Length: 50
Length: 261
Image 1 (cartoon, each protein chain N blue to C red):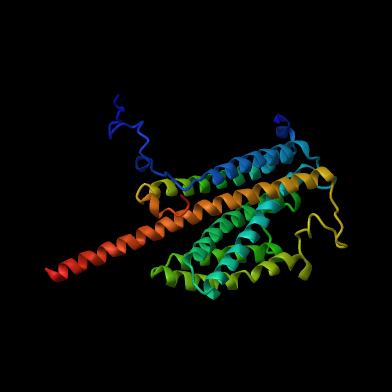
Image 2 (cartoon, each protein chain N blue to C red; image 1 turned 135 degrees about the vertical axis):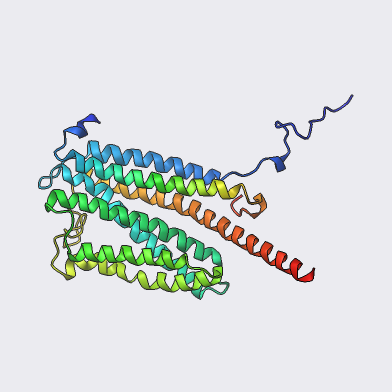
């Protein structure tokens, strides 16, 4: 996989992947943290997915 | 012979009431999450490793495998928002569940639309020499992005859940009309942006097999990710609504208690 560093314009190409998965990871972290925080304040009976 | 008893405060007790559900996950979402991670791994391996460079664009074509799936996902998310909005507005029960799906889907769509713009700008710099042009496809995509930012802003205005659902459903149904405009902008106007990547003007597949497979993996990976995020985000919104309602009930009870004393 280190061959990707030999791409012409590797910064743009790898940057597009890093920015995509970085933003997705950030959004996912925010959703999961919000879910954990709120779930602690709510009875399990009120969680329709349980 | 006596039966051993388990102390009430024993953490190894089988008392089901002591086991609280943490977060918004279920077995199904965990399986979906693992499948998503595996396909994302494939996407990176094929996108940056196994797929060949393009004859004209060379390695810059590798951005296609994240750019096109993010655009597809944003379209899908906004269509789901419109569908759920219609189900809320025109359904007999006016279920707030549809409103929550609409809101969660729009949020995810905005994230993916932003990524479409960013990856498109990086690709544009490599192929056109500039990050941005006020070209038909780029401009209509930016307008679509701003429209859904507006949709989310309207959802954040005050009022009851029903008021939020009704006003945002109307916007959700209006904003989705922009998608065909964005998609066909490259045909309707002269555009720097290339036409459809997979099909040529005759509707035939015009792409190398491994490139097509890499793109397919990207679309599958991001679709799984979308479903996984939608399930979790919808559940979080349901909990936010419930806590809002509980807070309102508590405040009303306190006011009634004040009035009677």
